Image (cartoon, rainbow, N blue to C red):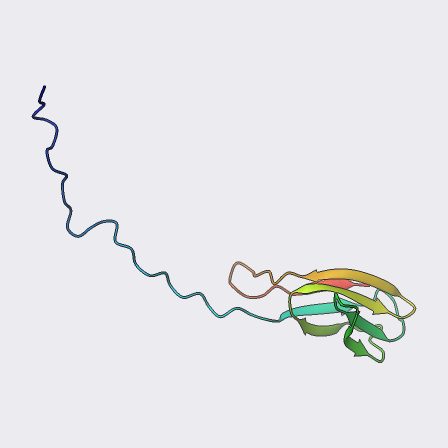
Length: 107
């Protein structure tokens, strides 16, 4: 049985609503991120170790002031002599405006 309401050929649209266009280029990835380490009380020298337990940053006497670093993504351990130690992760998170968010670590 034939139905004249059913099209015999598909309709063709011009221009094609399903054109594939190249995506916009993403901005260059940031490779290092801001970190601020603040001792909770005065102490001795401070160090930051990477996941391989090698010193990434060392300072003679960061206490009681905070010190600012720029580190790549990864897991780190901050140690302040006479105060303590703390593990922290640099994730590379971005703020809604696209700026990098600073990681604040209190030891």
